Image (cartoon, rainbow over all chains, first blue to last red; front, top):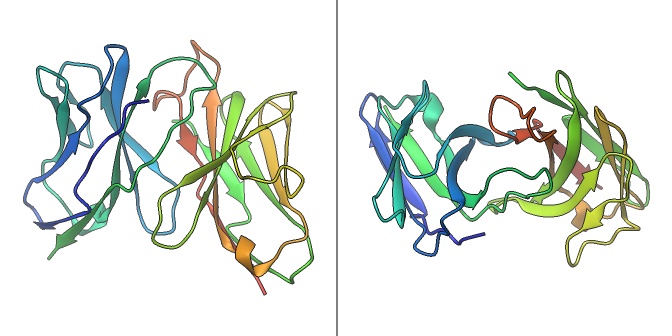
Length: 112
Length: 120
């Protein structure tokens, strides 16, 4: 699986959009970009994933650059409960044995 | 959506004793279970992968005789920490994946809520 690079921490004001970047310059053509988050002392939670098109769901939007070497997770209106470590992971889809390898992620702190 | 129930949420045990952690998939069949360990302020580290009905595959450096994994059914996997020592104190998290073609609503990986193990 391709390696990802994320900033170690970011701050965001409550109610504002949080934009979390991720670099994955060695991503392969069949690898997806997944985003998970982990609130303190809980298990990771799936947020969104995509291959090359931008994606949006009820939680967030995922913007993937045309060359697929980087992406941005957007939380449109951050709340205090969005404070968590956000992990960007790239891997192939399908195959029940494919494991998720977590990097260090970005600690997003949403401030009142 | 898919739910994975992990118990206990926290446990304190004496050094030298064994602790069992359960992970159940409540509304889907988990063909594969992943067990992670997380030390304070660190990321999740994969310990092992288990498929229902077969032996687990352990990551390099993880002692298979110390961390016993059983995945006897499609809805239950257990991790037993044998002869626990203080250095085994950590946050243990399971993750379940369903059958190809019947993946959970979050595209494959559903995590338990974690178990905080403290060995004294």
